[in-house]
Every structure is written in C-alpha cells, then in structure tokens.
Image (cartoon, rainbow, N blue to C red; front, side, top):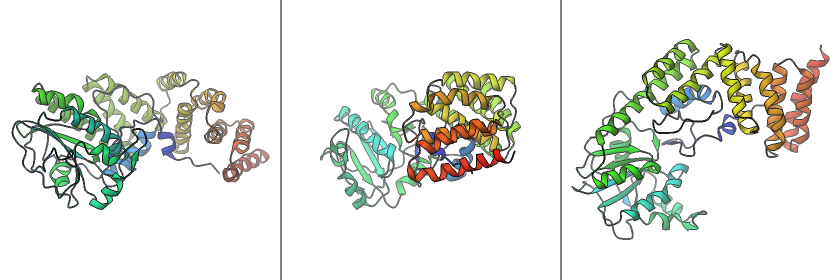
Length: 407
C-alpha cells in the first residue's frame, strides 16, 4: 500500500499571486507565464503535467474571441450596492466621465488573493485621491455577507477590513451584470482581475491588482503605451491557448505532439522567462513519456544539484519521479540520485513533513529494487509519525517486509 500524498502539499512553492477561479475557491488553475516574470525555479516536476488538464476542465472551454479587450470602450457600470465610498469622497459610477481614470476590480470575500490585494488598492486610492482616479471593487455576493466580512481584522495591519476598504469604492452586484459585461466579455476566468479605464473611456490595461501601480501611474500621466500593452496582452492569451492545447495533448498521452508544440513555441518567443518555463515543461514531458535520454538525465542532474540541501524541493522532485513510474514511465538513474540527495536533508524538515519524506524515500528505494533500504526508510517514517498516521505508514512497511520474505 503506497501512502497517497496530496498534490496541494507539494504546491506550496507556487506564487502567492495565483488567481483563484471565480466560481470555485481553491480550484487548480493553469498558471500562465507572464512575459515580464522571472523564470520560475523548478516547480513540482509534473505538477503542470499532472494537473493542467484538471485545471482546464475546471475553467471550462476557452471562448472563441473576447468581446472586450484592451482599447475597447468600457461598458457602463450597473452595480446594485455601493458599500464603501471613500468616506463620502466618491459618488456611485454608471457612465465614465471624460478625463477621469477608473479601476474596475472584481473580487470576493472567499478569494484569498483578493483579500491580500485590499491594502494595496487602498494605498493606490489614497495616493491618487483628488487626482480624478476612482477605484471601484465589485463582488457578486449578498451585501450582508460582505458587511459581516468587513468586521474581520487584517492581523498584519491590525485594522478591520471595513477600515482598510473605506479608502475606495467597495461594491457588490448580485445579479452579476457587471461580471457579464467585463469578466465574461473579456474571457477572464479568475479573480482578482482589474480593468483600468482611461481618460477617453477605453480599457487601457487588464491584469492582477497587485500589478496595477505602473500602468495606473502611466495612464494618469498620459504616458501609457496602450498599443504596446495590447500586443503583449494578446500574445499572452495566444500563449494560454497554446498551453491548453499542449496540456490536452499530454493529458491524452500524445506526448510527441505536445513536445513538438512546445518546441515550436520556444522557437517563436523572444521571452527568456517563457523559454525557461517551456524548457521545464518539455523535459517533464520527455520524462513522463519514458524518453530518458542522456540530455534528460543531465538536465535533471543539474536540477538536483540546484536543490541540494532543500528537503521541500527535493521532496517535490522525488514525489514526481514516483508519479512517472506509477504511470508507466521510467526514471532511470535519477531514482537513486534523488534518494541520495533527499535522504541527508529529511531531518531539516519540520516534524509534520518528515514522515512523508521518509515514505517518499521508501517508495523510491522500492522502485530501485533496494528493499532493505526501502524498509529502513519506511521504518523511520513509522517512528516519526504521529499516532493517527502510524497505522497507515505501518501498512506500507508490512507490505515491504512481506515482499522481502517472499523472495
């Protein structure tokens, strides 16, 4: 019996700015590459490969073409409930006034990244207070539910959410008309999402509110290059479609086609960050498909070297190798090398994590046909487990010992 570990446990190194799905808090999302982001350091090897198909299905099929984009005329707002108004400074907005700048942001009380963005939105609104800039944040929840949420406190700032959001216009629109006019029309599947409406009433920028500072400043100053951003924005969306296609191919076992598509995308992009992420994805698919050539081994040996001394990253990598083998792939000498790198680091991990890491080591040793070593690791897993976990760990240890006795 192999102890099952959740993928979420190994996803802890993912960016805190991952967007949450609008309809399902906590759903796994395909995290698209930002052309301006730094290369992501080796995620759980097959996290993208294993979960991207699930993520795509949870998002639903991509729409043919967005009706609302950068440069489009911003739809009027039809918000039902205005809960905060900047302490009387702002009036409800329907039509956008000429020469004013607006931020239309979509959020929800259950969305962690949305709540994390609130102090930043308040800071921006205070910065531009009196400069014809208004931030309008729109939920679709019941007003009473939001009022209850606002009573809660942000422990870092030691302020209630009511105090924090009092700087800008916090609203809710339960009939979701604004959501339809903006989020659905722009093919935006996750929140928080912000739309900057410029002085001419056109959409200037679409993105995460934590990235608002630079574009908002440029729009206010009149130095924003909308055409350049539009080209980047559209390129990113084309990339999203390509990544979805790659994931669908990989999910259906068409690894060769998926790899070829990645290589085409790598050849067509000038973004070094994107190339780095696509390179990671390509090698993960090669390993998943059992194509463990010298180049694949060399690549992952380098990755193991980069992770030396880090039990969490090595644990992610080792767990991913188990997944490859369980799905019929081959990991070759990487199995033994992962064991050699991870084993000395386990005691650096916290007490809750140690039994899981020893269990991973036991599974790898079993794959490597080293039953004595597997039994040794699983014995440690049992020893360091809490009582509720010991029974499950013991079941796998019994299985290993039975396998040895049968030989």
